[in-house]
Length: 586
Image 1 (spheres, helix red, strand yellow):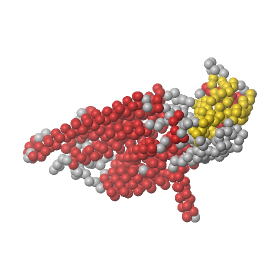
Image 2: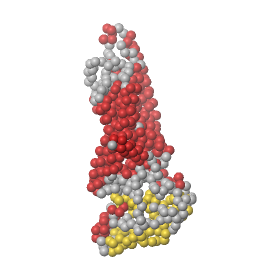
Image 3: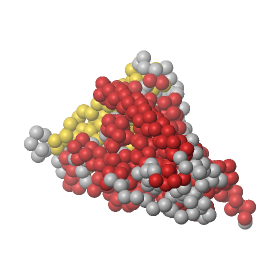
């Protein structure tokens, strides 16, 4: 009995891990022989301005063709999480075989069906289909100028381009406008025309890209502007800190040559005075170390996924970006455990198992909690975005059987390899009182101001990312995204180093949380910008779309803040260790 359970657990684990690997998203290998079946999948239908509010295509009273239904299953976890529900259209399409206009079904239009179509037309409903992974969009119908009469498009005119034995282009023309009247029968028809195309199979998704939008002059200018900001900021920080630190070192060296009486009468001040407290453990070390570990993992995931997206065109496969991100996140769990576990050990933490659990489940719990909350709204709306129960179980299995064990391995390595405190200064037994200082040197003020420059370096790129996710744009300029990530990290580290230096110079040694939060405050500005984008750049409406938007924008902003906070802390920690190593402490 025990061995059978073990085998079942291993099989489930392998199935879950295998589901994360990007594979072909269709049942075909994208090659066809003459007159071989070509499947037209019906995907979703929904309001144009609410991209995430989607429903099954046949939730509207459309009819399917007479051909036998072909079963389809989700081959990637990303497809299931994104609500990609593919239903066979029932249309008989064969490779290179043309079909003249042909009626494939009829709709007996009663009053409820008419009301459903009228509601869809009033809300600008579009539908999405797939042929050989190529998306096709069409509009349900249109109203007259007065908005009193409504018409349904009944004729799907498909034009498919092929190059050799591969499909490289699909176009849909909607014709056959029929007025919606109750107690009538509406005939739905289609036609298929095949044409040779010079488009290469590798370039068949280029038509869906929008170079005029993503490679606009303002995009290049924003990258150049951010790059110049980095050069200026790095130069300014280097010059100020080098000159200031040189003066500090000279003053401290001069003080060391004085006798005890002169030193007591001298005016000692500055960051050297807190050398006995600067490496004191932070408050709430368990939460702090878990945040740092999670931030390092998010940075690793972002870096690796962007590299993969630059090498592989992930936008050509349904759900491949999300599947890749989940797979990389699970695989990089040791990074979380290593940095979080080692930092917690250095700060004298003893409840390392609790820290490991919190670090491992912090981000998954935040994402899954938000997703499950939105899932209830999606279920209420009968939307296709509702996550199936089996997918929820698969995600929980990934957390418990992949992420947690790998995090445990990283924690053990971090505690054993770099968990010993090796600070350049001895920590005093009694904390030094923090003197009064100017209001603008308070940690709360530094935290609020610390995220302005990092946000300024990325806010234009945020517009392009938001537009690709919340509107009908495919993001493909991952080289830009990599540059923005590097710029963001450099600006964040420079800003937090300056903030920490001013804080220490005011003899306030609470730099750990201050450096983390000042960098993480970038997320607050990003979330505030998301409000501006929602109200002024989109036409979204309704409870479902609003909860979906602000829920996942909160998740995105929080993850970005944790990543920036970890990057800022790691850079500042190296700076603090460096300056106190070079000072002779009595």
